[in-house]
Image (cartoon, rainbow, N blue to C red; front, side, top):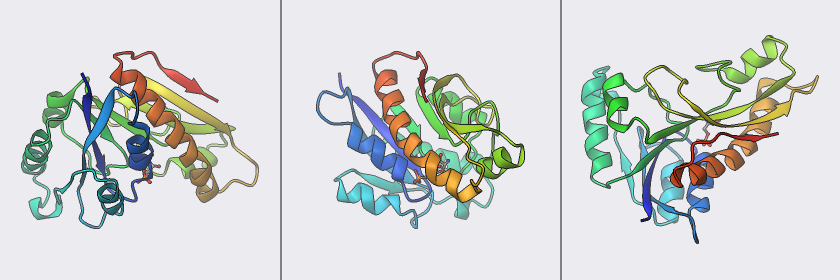
Length: 197
Ligand code: GRF
């Protein structure tokens, strides 16, 4: 049976678009919802242009009450009956209680070669550390931030003249290839990691 995928975003939604465009033809999933935590998220209009349902659950009125925000998030999600959640540049930390409701069904993309550089500013941190390689990781979401079983990684070689911006720009297309590839495999029930280089 076709799986329903909800994609959570905070920004421009280029990963969301890559995922949504991949779910056509004989793909075993279809996007059922793009949800943002801000009405300003540029990806919302892109999803609407593709005919995908959208929703906004703004975290700001909850003023730090994470469980209340997540209750609203959960309500918006279940209204669209997703089987799988894809976090795609969703910039809110989720609590254990929320994650438990989706554990084993929620994926995230992170712009580093996990377990290195969890959290923010991954490109700058990789450069500062003198890394020769960098990349991105898709993983299952578990309560620890940017942790959870790795489902795929794509890597590149850091160039001597790379800056955080050039590195981000070179990693992003890798994200767009990796995330759809992992989602497809995951939807088929296969959690074998995919390694792209
Ligand atoms: C991506 O680099 C993602 O890995 C990071 O935020 C960025 C989101 O970009 N967490 P987009 O909204 O998918 O264009």
